[in-house]
Image (tube, rainbow, N blue to C red; front, top):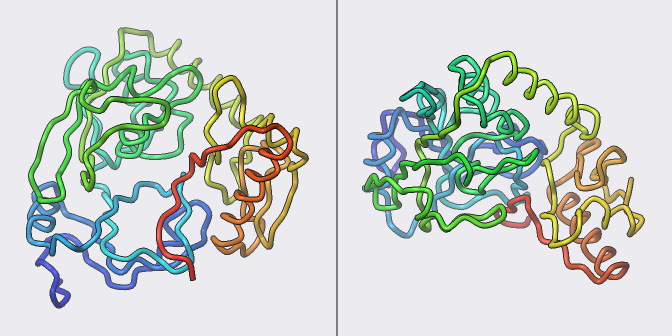
Length: 298
């Protein structure tokens, strides 16, 4: 399929593609172009031949993302099934495509008697997002398990970066601008499947009890400031259940915003900013967004 002024592709290139169905909040506008590459080579050639002025953004499961109502200019790249494979490359290492989910990675680790990756079970997202954001939960972080990753640069070149090259900090990496993660190697340690499954079950039960998993949400909204838990600051500022339009601060976990009806992305973002203002007024602590916000306002 060819769209005028765009490179030829082997995968799928869609103009004016709605993004709301692809993100957990189920809100937001369209991508100017949505590209779902057939494989790494298809992604490389597309980026190499694409106008260098055209913005490019990677989209995983859309779990920690607000797409603004005016949509996203440029190309949104979504890595599909071809990028979702997970294989055991040595006794304690998994080779993971960037489109693989945390559930698939942790389950494959269990089946191969690899412990230490159980926490990925609890992060809604894909390997690409985990690597970019130093995803973490329940005492584990990607920086603890990542050996290296493969990226396609904005000019289409393929490179491998070690974990040290990413200069990880809390929910942040120094991935090169415009780079798209296409694969990663995660290293654990030997374990027994029964014990690994028990830990995954414990994590799942804890999430089920404390988080609004069946709501249209974006996961953790704000980063935990030094010495504080974001949810406690939000709660102390009286924001539990606070609502703007169709967006609400979860009653179950106050660091989650939820779409309780037909919230616009503007509703969700405005609610987040109101929470930040109230927390600052109440405690003097500035909350920083953990959820990515992309695109244009309407």
